[in-house]
Structure formats: C-alpha cells, structure tokens
Length: 92
Image 1 (cartoon, helix red, strand yellow):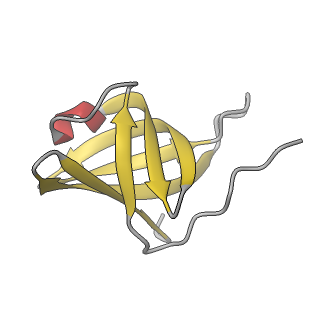
Image 2: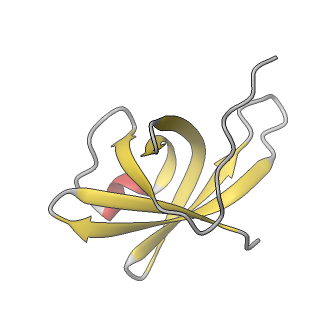
Image 3: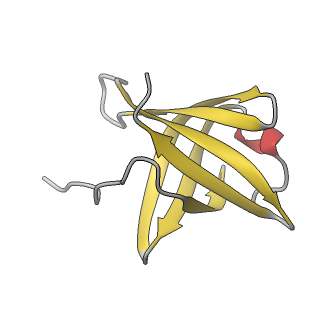
C-alpha cells in the first residue's frame, strides 16, 4: 500500500495542472476534475470537484478509492500572470 505525502493546512501549493492542462482561468477548476499541485518538490494529485465562490474556487478533494469519500477542501486563487495557488483548509 502506498500513501500520498501529507499536506499542511494553511500552506500554499502551486497548481501545475488542471485536467491535464496548464490552468488559464479559475473556471478551469469548476466541476469534476483532477488537479496537480507542487510544494517543496512534492507532487500531489487531487481528484474532486470545484465550485467558484466570488474570486476563488472551493475544491472538494475526494478519496480516489471506490468509496469516493471527502478528503479535504482546498481554496484556489488566481495570483495573476498564469499563477494559481491552492491552499488546503481545516474547514468542512
């Protein structure tokens, strides 16, 4: 059994891909998709669904197993110049 590296609540992760492509707008994160984030050389692949809330997207990460359980919620923001940041929060 393999485990993903842990993520830290409140820490910023750089988004490197959404749906297998470089993100261009917050709307790219809306609906069911897969997001790839990077921090300190650690790559995390997140599956789930996002909903736009004002100038952010709340992304509900799901367990990739057959149970489809909620894992955590991420807040995704557009930092400009094609840079997007995802922050896991301890809220549910």
